[in-house]
Amino acid sequence: KRPAGAPDRALARPVTKVGVVGAGLMASQLALLFARRLEVPVVLTDLDQERLDRGVGYVHAEVDNLHAKGRIPADQAGRLKGLVTGSLTKDAFADADFVIEAVFEDLGVKRKVFAEVEEVVAQTCVLATNTSSLSITEMAAELRHPERVVGFHFFNPVAVLPLLEIVRGAATDDATLATAFAVGKSLKKSSVLVEDAPAFVVNRLLTRFMGEVIAAVDEGTPLEVADHALDSLGLPMTPFALLQLVGPAVALHVAETMHAAFPDRFSVSENLARLVAAGRPGVYGADFQIDPEARALFEGG
Ligand code: 3HC
Image (tube, rainbow, N blue to C red):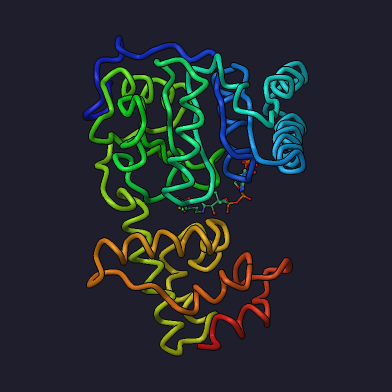
């Protein structure tokens, strides 16, 4: 059955090569997913060789894990590794049909990335963004072909969580949207069409929830108490563990977007901002104990 709001699937264009802009953790997870499910070449690009090597290395290590767990046979593991490559230039996207960006959450940076990609790809190539909260319409506005831009928002861990928010910008055309839904289906995700509204649907709700937990700590509730207050609801992980999975910088960015859009409904925690400014990955250390330095930063306000 066609998902609500999805255009006729006959409009979808074939995808035979995928480009991923960025080689960070999210981009690398995406590269693996696309290679595994679409079985087409996937090229990662980033600014320096070290990041590229790390991104491709992540994919190879995850492929080895999947093989070790018996999820994929040896020949498929070898093929998958061969499908994912890195390139320092976006010229490698020249024959890609679908390019997804997962770079730093900044509208200017993402606009620049798409403008550069537009210089090398064919007119029919879809430009997808994994933005957590930025406007698809604004991201596409200055491009020559804004009709090929679509939001394609995954959830961490990408390999495990089934949901995919597909976002139609003001200019997105039916062929782009149909291709996005077809790709979502090949990736075995549950695609839903959402409005191009700040933080779309899931992050909008999650930010409210996380914001309340963080506010409780800001107001003096000990970290452990706030983090475990809802344990009996059977959530898959505690709020501060989720903050660590998502990354405090991403969570802060989404909170800022929501605060800018709805100042009376969303606040930005200064303590969270301090945690991010200090470059901490979260409040937990490697041993799953709350890190004393992170506690001091977080509770220090
Ligand atoms: N990468 C790849 N695979 C992972 C993984 C990761 N980071 N973490 C866990 N997995 C896999 C494991 O390998 C395991 O696979 P297997 O069955 O093949 O062995 C499977 O997931 C289950 O893992 P575990 O048994 O170790 O752990 P859990 O059962 O506790 O599940 C979890 C872990 C899936 C992370 C679960 O805790 C969960 O669903 N947490 C909530 C995550 C969530 O809400 N994410 C959304 C965040 S919002 C977001 O991402 C949007 C962004 O814009 C901010």
